[in-house]
Amino acid sequence: MDAFYASVEQRDAPELKGQPVVVAWRGARSVVCAASYEARKYGVRSAMPAVRAERLCPHAVFVPPDFPRYKAVSRQIRGIFARHTDLVEPLSLDEAYLDVTETKTAMPSATATAEAIRMAIRDETGLTASAGIAPNKFLAKIASDWRKPDGQFVLRPRDVEAFLLPLPVGRLPGVGQVTERRLARLGIATVGNLRALGQVELERMFGRWGARLHRLSMGVDDNPVQPERPTMQVSSEDTFAEDLPLASLEPHIRRLADKTWAGYQRERARDPQRIGRTVVLKLKTADFRILTRSLTLPALPDSAAGLGDVACALRQRVDLPADTLYRLVGVGVSGFIDTEGETAQTDLFEDGTRGRHEPRSVRRGTQSQSPIRWKSRSS
Image (cartoon, rainbow, N blue to C red; front, side, top):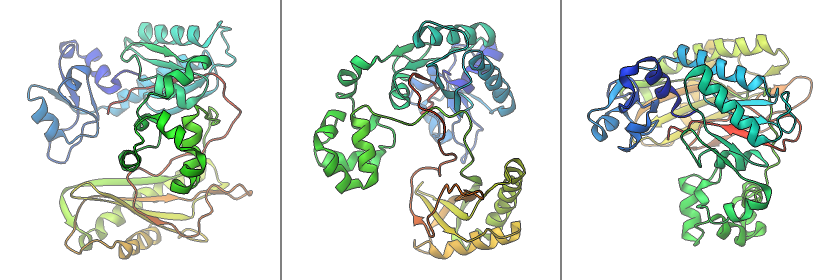
């Protein structure tokens, strides 16, 4: 979907059409949930502090988010997807992968299917969507950005190499700013440069992730479209009204542990065979550095209080100066295993500093040959 939250607001309030709309609460701690294309012209992006968005676009119209309304529209759109294929892998409220190798509507091609879906979305919701059509998920993901908004881009197998090799290496999924800078120091700026480096060298530098990078540089992605994905993490987090030192976080950690425990119990009720074993503490410093500390146990504590005890204890493994201030804390349960024997995570002890959220799901299913990725990238 194109600028989904902002587009819903503009649809439902005609006076907002053509205006730079920012979906966010006002305030020093608020972040942008979505920005209309009119606001993006001024550099406003999702996840940006709202105060910065206001500086960039002083005449922006700020609208508080209405997630129940967005979820209702999302369900309507997924209903349109379901008329064409059961192989739909939602990624969020506003984007999904579709495998249209075989469809219920017997459309002659993936391109025709994408056109029909986009037309139905426009007619039935009054919103626009963009699509990328390609032989696999990774390429469809890139293609979905190519002609936004309200467009679609077809990447045929014979065109993959010419399309892929000139792209900046940062367009590959999983290549963040740190990896991009590391590669830049080696003179690796494009996907073609990365491919030329070779699998052996990439594995030497990045381990198993290097093998994945090499496959991506070749345009290869074997991950299927998976309609049902088991949960990999249940978590809760909160941003403080003002920055706090680590020693003051215990009440907040315990409050979030209560919320996470309730969510974990709902997950257990849905799928009693899957249990979590890893407790995760997430922290974000005042300068936006994200840290996670986690501990995998033979079994989780049997109460919210016990979960809070472990999460609080993980603070001892934060090695930053005592006067470091934190703007956010989160508590999660991950390391899910299937008690019938399928292990989702086997690490006995995990520690690290990460710049991304923990994964929420694992992939299962059959090979996808013709995925379509529908998305609204607000950043």
